[in-house]
Image 1 (cartoon, one colour):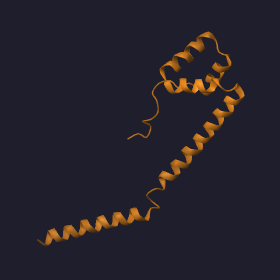
Image 2 (image 1 turned 60 degrees about the vertical axis):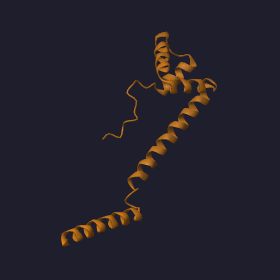
Image 3 (image 1 turned 60 degrees about the horizontal axis):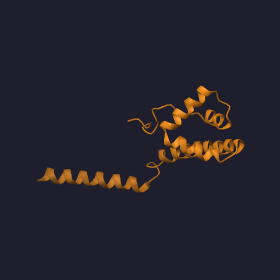
Image 4 (image 1 turned 135 degrees about the vertical axis):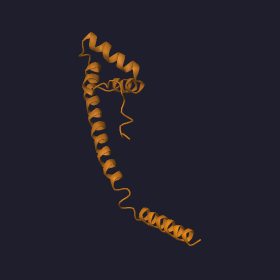
Length: 112
């Protein structure tokens, strides 16, 4: 099973294009393309509304901070999930108890 179920299948609006749209540096065709993408995705249109309240430099700083924090969180979460079962002594104890009970049940059934 793929771990990429949450990745959208539609086109994603790049940060630089969104910021260029906010600054008015896009051609009319590019603006229509961005507006069509924003119309299709409510989350990106909400982001645009929030970024409209900031200046261009503040918007770039916010986008950079969000991207950095997201990358950091994804890396630490990935590492944490890999160690989840290996370092959990109680999980190993539970597995051992279940296996012991299965072996015991097998032996009791064979004796009958």
